[in-house]
Image 1 (cartoon, each protein chain N blue to C red):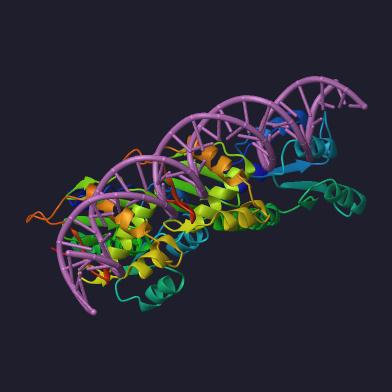
Image 2 (spheres, rainbow over the protein chains, first blue to last red):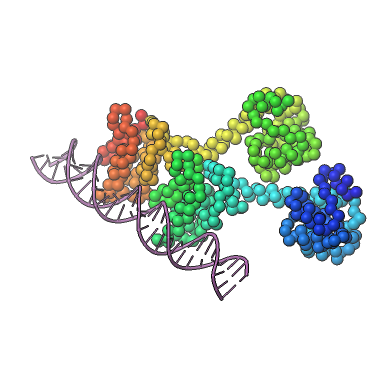
Length: 215
Length: 215
DNA sequence: GCACCGCGTTAAGACGTGTTAATCCATCGC
DNA sequence: GCGATGGATTAACACGTCTTAACGCGGTGC
């Protein structure tokens, strides 16, 4: 019955009739949200909830007997996102689904918001994700390498002094005879595709520092 | 119909027939601009607009009923870039698309103002790329050589004192008996094609400094 | 003419950076 | 605890660039 109503309401629904197969379906990655009845054969709602939570943070709504505050509280404490007292109107369930999905969307959006990449030519950096791509292929950078590249990228086309690189990317002032930066730059260069003209994307500006090329 | 026309006009078009899939397509990152009909099944145009805007600042054009100022204003207020009254001629839509895309391009270009070379005759310098061309062939300059040439190029046709060259290009005041500049200029001259009349492109203005010839 | 100055040119030495390998350090699973 | 692992740092050497020094030459003022 719920399925029919929800589908008419624009949701794509899949039903499973015991906890185990429900958990499997939920973890298949094809769905945005799970609705669990507390009363189920095999694993009950709480066991299923726990099983899904071991591997996923997807939103989960519990269907509980009306007025059963104990169940409700237990569910929320174990990681459910909401509960709906049963029997419930399909309308109400649909509304709650929408609220939770919208909340999720917003969050994803604001996550993506932060994810405006830094761009320097074919190079893209997502600082919040600590992810870097060169020419579409992901780069495998260590943490400090990413930090250095990020600082360079924030000043594309202009040299950045080793002192600044050290304080901003490594969080420590540059000391005499400190060659760390040079070594890190070297390994970044090895991981970075060269420019069309064969030069490195990171140019050294002698006695000034390093400069990321924008082209 | 619009699709046919736009494709003949050189655009690569993808059509979706409801708001949700339209938003997905728009956010896929494969497209430069979105055109939304206000009247759509599923999410309507405004909902779709909002959805795209949560994650992207891509340009969006709304197709609204002719004369419906309310729709128009609502669209623009919610982040649309332009609107086109419907029914509209494909010509008009194409024209607006081009205007907006051109505006976007310009902006991208000025962001990359890398692409503005310093020019002195056959000599071109891209400071942000640290790249130099003479007569179309790339020059192999050391870091300080590039710096010196850049400073000279910023004052084409006028002499630049050695003191200025030293502070601006090497970052150090000129001291007595310092002949560094002269030596560097010498090696730049060797790498630079001479003028048609055989003279060097870098002229020495005695007791004043050096001057890059604009011709 | 002569001493001096400014610059051109060259070469040797000083210096900064590239590169590699060894060492140190933190983390993790047992 | 232990070793294993991976990354950061240090050390050492190689190399290219910058600076310094030296000499040459033309111009200038005495």
